[in-house]
Image (tube, rainbow, N blue to C red; front, side, top):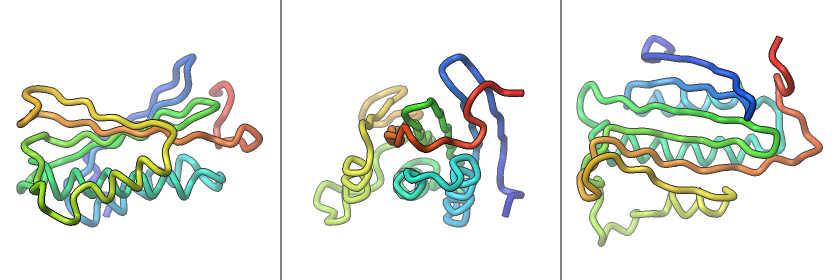
Length: 154
C-alpha cells in the first residue's frame, strides 16, 4: 500500500547515506516500513536484527503515541555508515499510551536493547507530554559484509 507513503528522501554525506520516509500510522504501514528498510539493507547478516528493531519501534509509534489518532503519522530515518546502521522512528509525541502496571510495557524496547549496540530517545517538548518523540537504535554491522551502494555514489 505505497499510497500511504507521505514523503521520501535520500541524502549522501561524508559520514554515510541517509534515507527518510514518512508513513501514515496504521498497522499495514508498519509492514511498509519494514519493506523500506529491507530494500535498503538487502541480504546482509544484520538485516533480521535491523528489521526486528524497526518493527518494535514502529509498533510503539503506531500504538502508544499521538500518531495513533486519525490522520497520525510516523517517520523512519535510516543512517548507514560502514560500521553501523542507525534506525530512528519519530512519532507525534504525547503521553506514553500504556500504564506502568501494563504487563506488556517495555517488552519491545527490551528486544531492541538486546539486538542493538546502543539506543536512546529524543523528546521535543515536555518530558511527560512531548510534541515529538524519536526513538533510535544502532545495529552493528559485520565488517566483512558489504551493503548495497557502499562506497561513493555515482
